[in-house]
Image (cartoon, rainbow, N blue to C red):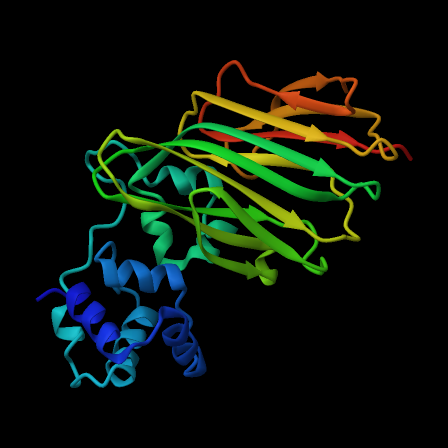
Amino acid sequence: MSFATVLREALRQRGLPLERVRDRLKAQGINVSLATLSYWQRGRSQPERAQSLRAVDALETILDLPEGTLRSLLGPPRPRGRAPSGPQDLTASQRVFGENSVVEQALGEAFAHFNEDISAVVIRETVRLDEHRCIRSVSVNQVLRAIRDGAGRITVVHHIDDTETESIDVVANCGRLGSVRFLPELRSIVVEILFGRELDKNETMVVDYDVLLGPSRQISTHHERRTRVNLRDYLLHVYFHPAALPVGCRSYYRERIGAEARNTRRISLDISHSAHMLPVRCPAGIHGMAWDWPA
């Protein structure tokens, strides 16, 4: 039997949800994300790092398994670096996000398999600001394509301007909301959207969700989308409150985090006090809109 099969069966017999397992590991000073535990039990990844192997030893105790039961089932470590072939180059994540990025820190070991079986085709985002110049909601509509059989979810990481906002809520309009984790130390929220079934290769799926933020004291100056694949279309539509209008807006593109912005273009507000950008081409990298407030 495989490591994933034994782990999954032990969890079932003990009746322990992954949240409780994570909490019991954390009580022992072992931090493992829910995404990582989920990947382990589904066989999408296996424990390899020292911290993960400590977790395996602790899991044997938590699940009342004989010592060495899980350890003995671990195969050799997967090769590191770029895969020799395949439809998606996962190292593109680090090329765009940078080494030890916020996304990598938020996902832990699951970052190595970050949405490896699904790829975005079209993304449309609507951002709304309030009269205090703060982002209050981000609505996302994505058309996704499975790049292999079995895709059943997508994980997204959103940056939050103010970690002391009064509330954060996520609503799934198309797709089913899975786990939601707020990581104030990383100023991020990690959201899992479930498809409800496994897709066949090349099958498409639409997910639509809203990130709703409470009142904030942190003024927002930009919004951007980071993508490791070329998109067919990316539409960013930003609504400003009539009582708080910027003096100027501009779109930009960066190849990676820390790179200089280029392809900058001025954007005018329309009659609805909104601005939008729809790049003619949307290569992998960072596409965003920035705005300036009056002094």
